[in-house]
Length: 607
Figure 1 (cartoon, rainbow, N blue to C red):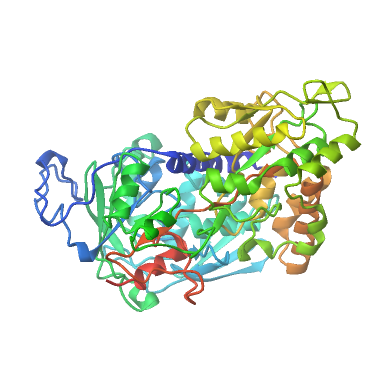
Figure 2 (cartoon, rainbow, N blue to C red):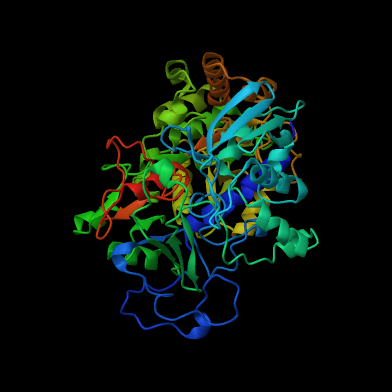
């Protein structure tokens, strides 16, 4: 399997997401209709003209018609070009997919299922062919029909240029149109990874061929030149169009001719959506608490204090952990290190960790009780594993049992209280994550403290992020923290398991590796990871995932420290009400009202 090309883009996206949570840049509270207009040089409206935009309406929008969001854009926007590699909200790849450029299907975080959007249905017509039927009503915002030619063109861009979705071509042989409303994706017969190809139909935003062919022509098919295209007035199929932007905020306006009225039954409730660019989480949290922001995708410490203080703030889950888990930040062991290369030592460390304390002190109680597995404890993932079969291997916090385990393998304590195993002192080992990632820093301090109680010496190390990245990839670490394949997609939990355990194609220590950072190797695990994407029968899949999880629980190449939300979807109902909550029967996931199936929230809210 050719996995390195797939993991690098995923890894870069993961790093970006981590930076979003840790802190960032930003601006002033959302303006109201009474605010004075900004200086002319700050104002930009789509259209390509060098003339200043009209004042007044270009900046201010009625509060009761505008949904304000934060936490998705840090820093002034530079472009709205999907091919640039770093487009601004709402074009950014993978967290506001359905506002301007839509995907073929919408992923639902709650179930893991793909729901119809530009595509109406998909099916495997044989082991190598995915057939997709398109919605005949779909149109671009300039009125032209959306057809199979646009789908083929968008996929082919990833083959032609090195862009966000190029890695899918590792598993794809060809994408062809079969009439105006049907597309066939033919898998690479040498590497037919169905799961990753299903990822593509829910993550790839569709681009209009008639627009981007002209951009390519003007740029002489040179990607560096194409990336310079600002694309300030993007033509998409989504319910919104660009309205206004400057270095403080970005506003989009509803397209009242949106084709999706036939699919959703009506238009979205907000006429405008504005993302204000705050300088840091504190500024964004303050605006959110006061009702100047409606939907927040920021880490808010002790969020319950907001509603205890009287603010009409809600999380998707009413009580702790408040948010639906979407990833498992974990520690990885360098398996070439003496002492750490012993699975019993790793198990003892896992049993010594106080996961409840990590949840409480590092992420404000937003992590549910730890149930070690390769799967999240959600409906979308837990179904893949026989929970009864893995339960005897799952560890819990038990310091006495951890000490007894180390005693049983002959790891005796020295005069300083640190154990020695087969002549190797168990420490000091450095445990590492980037400086300033406060929740991760706090979690690792707790791990280091817990290890002392079982006679293992662990010291925290918090370098700058670029140093951590290099250490992670080259294996220059003892124990290091990272998130293995976060997010919800059709390829989970396979993607997470592969990132943790798959050994083929992983560079040796000292060279760059983009997955399996501890260089774990197990031939049976490799075989299972290779087999899973070829299996569709549920019983066989469950058996494979269960066996793989049992291997991981026995050998412990990584230890999850917490469950973390995919996004922090917190709402303030001062202006807009009716956001989805757990148990409301809507099946609308907490995906910040604009990504994947979370877009359906915009049709439910009211003011």
